[in-house]
Every structure is written in structure tokens, then in C-alpha cells.
Length: 405
Image 1 (spheres, helix red, strand yellow):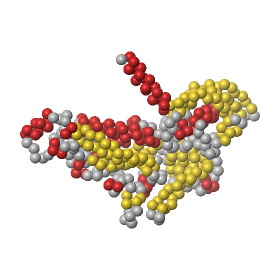
Image 2 (cartoon, helix red, strand yellow):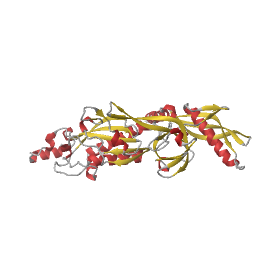
Image 3 (cartoon, rainbow, N blue to C red):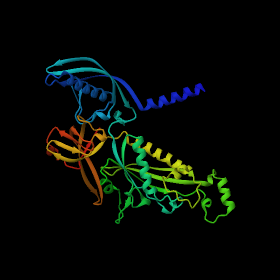
Image 4 (spheres, rainbow, N blue to C red):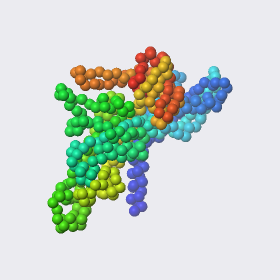
């Protein structure tokens, strides 16, 4: 028994270490001293050195990164999404020409399975969860589960908000897939296949989660047949654990990029649970009676699995938000403290443009302006950043995008 426990603990430790790596880094930082405020300069210099340590540990090289006097300079990137710097030790500090220089040693933890060590703990990426229409609505009559089409998104939204580093909004009244059989694409009258880009853009989130419920049938339809007798009912009650009572739940899940409409993830989930209620029972989806059923328990496990897969799929992707206003060198974008934005953060600016394929299908292109903003003001749901040059120089407009790397 003791050896078994040791084996389990070792397996857990190996699994954790496979996701997170910690290394010791020495790095330099500097900061100007204003009005003799040495404490503030020291804090800024340590922060700068910590950023250098995160960059070196993650081996993440940006197109605008350069080395000056042995120190990595940061322009077109956001450090917050890189490695977590811990146990900082100041090795040396000196003042030269009103500038404080520090050298530190620190432990840097980063997620080794993400490109460049990008961490899931950074910003809270936004997503909307839309309705889950039924391919065959009559299958929901058993148990009166018709409300699953909107309530499934509500349950998934709550689960995402409780268990992940994502911010989900319930859009369960919005159907993304009018052509359920061909979802996630749909066919136009001219015969062309298009995506759901137009529907996605109105949600103003970074990602859109949608889906279709493909099957809710019983494994053995005879167990709920209307023409029954006393002996059949008695047998069914005694045989409630049998596979004859299994009911399917087959759900397709899609993740679309909220800016380009691109399909990023598609997966079908298949589960089955025992349904032991009378055929006349009208419990409704997500009711207390529903969750008590084995079918309800299996549904909850399915929602948990979908949530885990969404977190895994999106945690290594960069954070992005739409620009809502520009004024000279200042840019407003629709993410604030609720998303983890802080004063001093840096984000890259991308131009958003559209073009059409064969005059029908709309495509969105994001082009790096090679410019970044530094956040100067943060509100709960929006923030303001300042460009190094006038916004007109890059023709930055509302609906363009800021992105971290």
C-alpha cells in the first residue's frame, strides 16, 4: 500500500513538472531617478530586471526585441503573459548618470508546453457561449428537456467561470448555426460555403463557443414505449441498472476566433447515462430531478470535460481586445481590470482589414503595425493606452485590435 501511494505521488509530481518548469536566471534592469526618489527607481529597475529574466527564461524573441548594453529591451510585447518571476535577490546596484542599475537573481516558472513559455495565468480571455440547437427536437420530449438548447450554454458558462482562467458570457438565446446539419459551416443560396463571421462579430469577444446537440435517444426505445403493461413496468423498475435504460448525449463543440471568424477547435463528445424516470415525467433540463439521474450526472461530467478542453485549447493563445476609440496618441480598448489589465502593461497594435474570396466569403486579416501602447489608465471594463507616435501615423481606427505575445 505504501509503495502504491509513493507511485501515485511520483506520477502527480511528474505530471505537474511536465507543465511547469523553473530555472534560475540572472538579469539586469535600470530606471531613471526622478526628484531623488530612489525607492521608486529601485522598484522600477527591479521590475525591468524581472521582465528581462522572464524573457530569457522563456526564450521568447520578438521581432522588435533588441539588446542594449547586455540588457534585453522590450517594445512590441506584453511581459505579463510570460514566466512568473519568484524569489528575487538583488545582487548589485549602482547609480550612473541619474540612472539606477540593478542586477538580480530570480527563479522563473513558465509553462514548458506553451510556445515561448506563455502562461495561462495572464489576462482573462473573453468568450461567449451561444445556444446548442437540437438536430432532432422531438428527442427532447422525453423528460421535457427542450430547454437544453439554451440552458446547456448557461451551465457551460457557469462552469467555465468557476473553473478556468477565462471570462465567459452566456449568449444562450443566440443561435450561431441556422444550418444545423452542416454546422459549423453553412451553404449560401449560390452554393458557396461560408462561416459564421457576421454572427460572431456582433458578440465583441475574443472567442465564441457554440455547438449542436446531435443525439438524445434511448439505447433501447422499448423501455419507454407507450404501449406497456404492469409486468413491463415492474420489470423496468427492477432492472433500472441495465444498459437498456441508457440514453445518449452527443454534442458537437466549436470554438471560433472572435475577430477573424476562423474555426479553431471542433470536437464531438459522446456520453450515455441511465434514464430511469417514467416516460410521462417532465423534469426539464438542469432541474434538481434531472441532476439526480445518472443521465444528469453523466451530463455534468461531460460539461466538466468540455470546460477542461476549452481551457487547454485557449490557455496558450495570446490575449486580444478591440480598440473602441482613438485620440492622437491615446487608444481606448474594451478590456480593463476585470480582464487583468494594469497600468504600465504593453500591448501590440494590429490593423484589422477585410477582403472577400470570390466576391462572397469575407476574410479578416490582422496586420502588425510594429507599434505598441503602454497602458496609462484602467477602468473595470476598458483601458487607455498611449502610443509612441500619433495614431494617425498608423491609421489606427476603432475595431482594430491590441494583442499580447
